[in-house]
Amino acid sequence: MLKYTGERIIPELMKPTNGMLLEHLARYHFAIHYLNGRVLDFACGSGFGSQAMAKAAKKRINQIVGIDIDAASIQYANAHYYHPSVSFQQADAVDPSLPEKLGQFDVIVSFETLEHIEDEGQYMSNIFHMLKPGGTLIISTPFGLGRGKPTSEPFHVHQLTEEEFKQLFHNYSQVDFYYQKGVLVEPGRQGLHYPIGIAVCTK
Image (tube, rainbow, N blue to C red):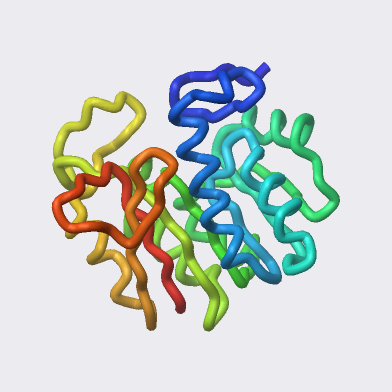
């Protein structure tokens, strides 16, 4: 049985009003507008987001592949979030052979993953090589003190500053930045603090 650890989002074990659950749902709903063709849910966790996207964009997608490094999460996803257009499999985000194993995608979604990754370069390289030319990446991360700096979150390697986050996407032809505060996702307003950044990138 998959256990709620404070990082893994398992809707069945959480109150509908749980703030972290609502934030995650808001990000997936934000991504729905961009979905088409073959989609990768990078670090899919319990799988609820992959299924939600498949249901909402069923006329525009061909397949959603959800991957996660945690075997228990993949087992839970297969048991609880089956959808005919979705497949779940265990995989490591920084495995250099990942692009060869999974192929390319029209859209890659990677929410709240970056802050858990030590080998940031390999992670971003895998994403870039798995994204088709003209494809869309939607990626989010919480802001913090910066690369290599301590964080109060026990499962986070570090949390990038806003500037560090923005510097990750120079290989893309177009990048639009959005910000999240609770369930609100918007381009950003002067003087308002946003704890989470979201980048929408076109290769």
